[in-house]
Image (cartoon, rainbow, N blue to C red; front, side, top):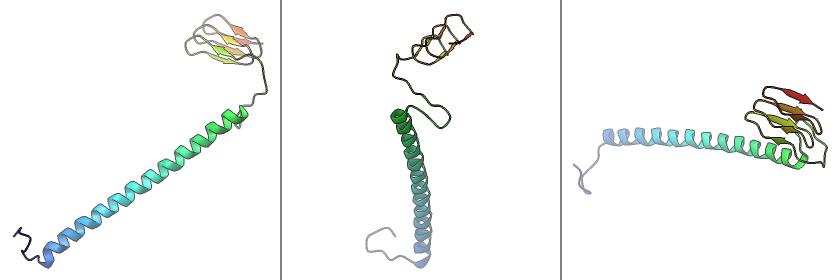
Length: 108
């Protein structure tokens, strides 16, 4: 039956109990995944905070109060005070270095 006053047998309770156990395990698994994700996000936040605070990562350090670098070209990289990577796929390394031709590296 399905009325509020209908009786329930043990077999019906076992089916319901099994479903509740399965749902509880799924919730536990989801909680663990969220906790792991939260830990990873916290680690990323800490790493970004370190970069912002110190201007460096473990294998890359800077020590400057000069003009910002400028990577203007598509897929370009500029590293160094006042360095400019103006062309596509160019790299400018060092203070005042300027890369104006595509696919070039300028070291200054």
